[in-house]
Length: 322
Image (cartoon, rainbow, N blue to C red; front, side, top):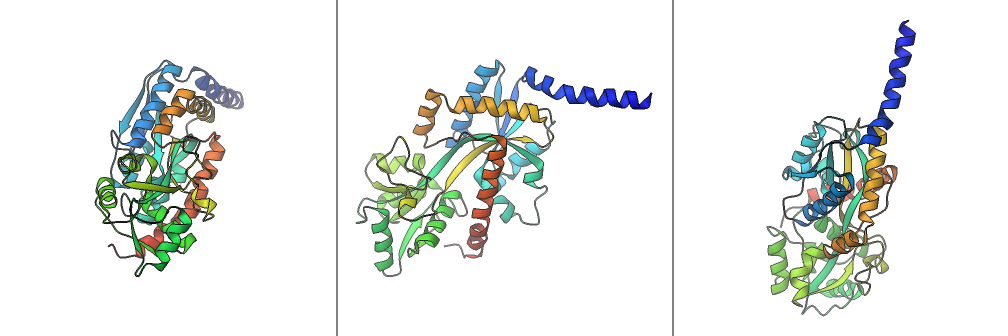
């Protein structure tokens, strides 16, 4: 009798997950993000959430939980019900930087706590120079830095952020004599480059816009795997310096324990959304590009990112702040 009851219970659980996915979602879905309201990742996340709302005929609500390098949002997303109605829009820094900065102090293991769903978008980091810098290409910039006494300075959004790490990766791969100078935020760094106080800038394409639109900053390359479709004349940095590929990225995650059938359904719907022509166009104006990834491929992407960036973050942490 007990065996019959146990078997019936197992069958019921096994059948319930596909049924849950088939009816999912039947109420609003919340997305927790570490992005501050109004910044580029937040705008991208809201664009995707709006399209999912239309597709699902259920409201997709963005909840901003910025702060502590992404830890606040991760903690909020880790403690929710495992029913798929609260998901997590993680950013690159949470996986690439936070585990190193909080080594031995993290309250949970990100990999064990969350299940990858899919890629929302990535924002490749570009390198630009003040208009008066005589370098017109990445190769010329490297040569100029190496013949400049004491080298050249580069700015980035913040110390330890993806733009700064990209500059460190570029320096390591190219052997260019450049070094990071810290400023209190992207706007100040951009203004320093526009004014010529700092000659070089690493930043996302959208972040460079205030300087490039006025002609004060000249873009030399972008750290994408290849040239971007909407700026085909801008070379990929790795055409000159192999291995310099870097982006800030936004990945959709689920708390571990959410039924796989729901994970797969959200992945399929997300991939439809980021392939929509109007979404592609709007994302590109924000310097954002997506990849058509399965949950497993998304997990492999995160793993490769951590293997690349963790050693660089550790080296940065050893350097004195300037």
